[in-house]
Length: 51
Image 1 (cartoon, rainbow, N blue to C red):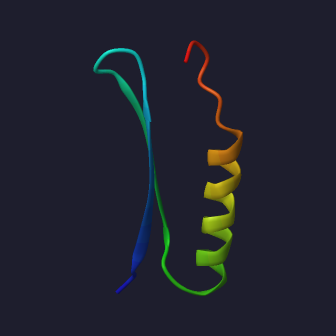
Image 2: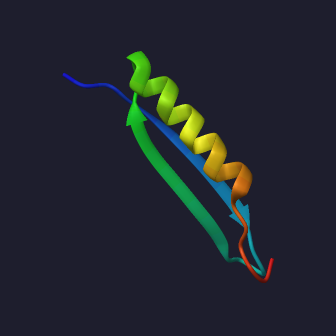
């Protein structure tokens, strides 16, 4: 059985609109560390035009 970790980011938009990014990554071993690092890089570099 595999275990996963979910990373989620919600970014409010205009009115009732929002952007949602959800990533599923392995929950153990080196893959978990790599998944957390990758999510952090994407989150920190995310730019949504018009917000």
